[in-house]
Length: 207
Ligand SMILES: C[S@@+](CC[C@H](N)C(=O)[O-])C[C@H]1O[C@@H](n2cnc3c(N)ncnc32)[C@H](O)[C@@H]1O
Image (cartoon, rainbow, N blue to C red; front, side):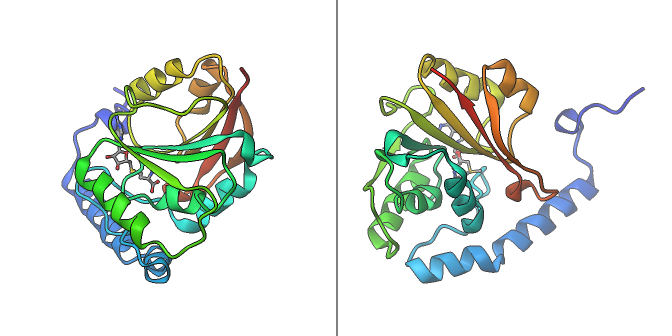
């Protein structure tokens, strides 16, 4: 019988060891820690929930690849954690920059990070504590950023909320491309990589 997909297989002790090794390596990641040292923030330390920050250079690469002009778009990080992505995006001329996070402690940490942040801010960051399925979202064309925050059922619910609007989906460790195409998206930019948090795609859905 074929092995079930990874997500439904029971984890073995070896899986747990691999996961722990990755977790420790990520805690020590010099790029992440360098970002915090330089900007006075605390975004690096992972969380035993599902908080994992996107590497700063990946966020910059994603922002560089977005369709111009950025002033047309409100940028929303769906599951913004400790706020790193939102703070980096605030250095660009988006119409608005918003982080939505459902976990109160992470939301508060993001706000404290914003207060301490010494990097460039062009668009004042906004912080919403709530679930992306119900939290208020900005009007007009959107850039929705995701880094593996939730399952496809939640993403589907968010995409339903913004049906009829232009949406650029910026996804690190992206969902299945065929699934996105079935939701009406077209790929703009695909960056393959064996490392999960360095693999990303831009998709666009016309209004
Ligand atoms: C992998 S972290 C990514 C953090 C940040 N976007 C980044 O890339 O640095 C995913 C975040 O999504 C949040 N999250 C998960 N489900 C959510 C939901 N339904 N509504 C809002 N936030 C959610 C988690 O609490 C976590 O902070």
